[in-house]
Image (cartoon, rainbow, N blue to C red; front, top):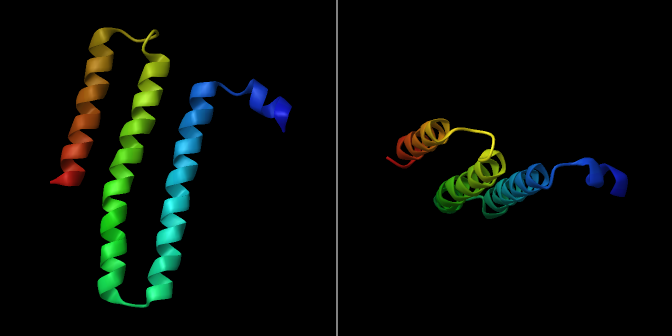
Length: 93
């Protein structure tokens, strides 16, 4: 296992770790909804996921962009940033 981790890019490993954290939150929400067995409480749990999801998305994209910043031109980075902004506007509005 240690050899596998040594071959992985640290940025990719951190991005995957954030996604694993997000998946843990999602699974916890599933079990909380089933445990409470209430539509009102399920909506509250789901609303909390609506906050966590974009935060994880922003951090993951930021890590990825920092990792490839040296390989891309400023105009391409700006286009990616605009795209991420549009996704967030679409999700939050």
